[in-house]
Image: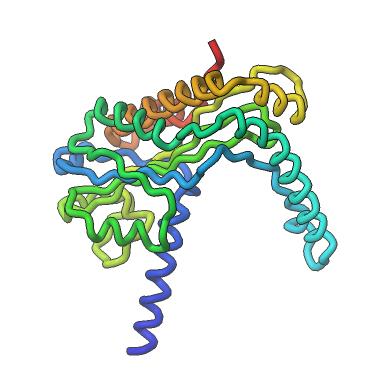
Length: 281
């Protein structure tokens, strides 16, 4: 009995970890049209963990190709430290220019507007989560009294070369109403909440290019730093609107049969996942 209890605990922890890392899920899963009428109320959570805009780096992976030696690991550490330091120097004046701009509130407003315009019924006002406790998602699903729960993860960060600012989002919906269980991506009746239990998932990106051709990282960073707070906020708001509209559109699509999905269905999904270029006007 003690062994079984330990096994269940390990499995539950694995589920919790997997749900927290849901942004790595590939491809998509649209709502089954038969599930849509069963969804009359949705608990929605916007998970935005950033206080300031981020900057991604090109992570060195030399040690993954050269095994059994500490030198490649040290090279990776050195390169990643240098690249992080360089990104921090480039992004510092941009953050100063943005001042106390509240990205989370802005994108929440855009998402609320767009989701109300989708044909998904009962979407609640988005709740904001800034710091995610371990096991939050599984517990939130279990405690919800709605028909389904939707998690919207958002992130905004400059690309490693600073040639664009990217807004990314992963959206996943899980059933609470037992009548929705047959429409899970991987239908099952077990007690564990797993990634395959979703009834909808997709990933989205809106990209704001700096607009300079053939420029290096330093030049791109300097170009961003020259923009005023009003210019930067206007660009981010426009990208947020594009991102929200794509999510609302995708939530309005029904899953289609396999043959149709190979043509029109796949075209729609690819469009929803493409970068949305937003240029200054």
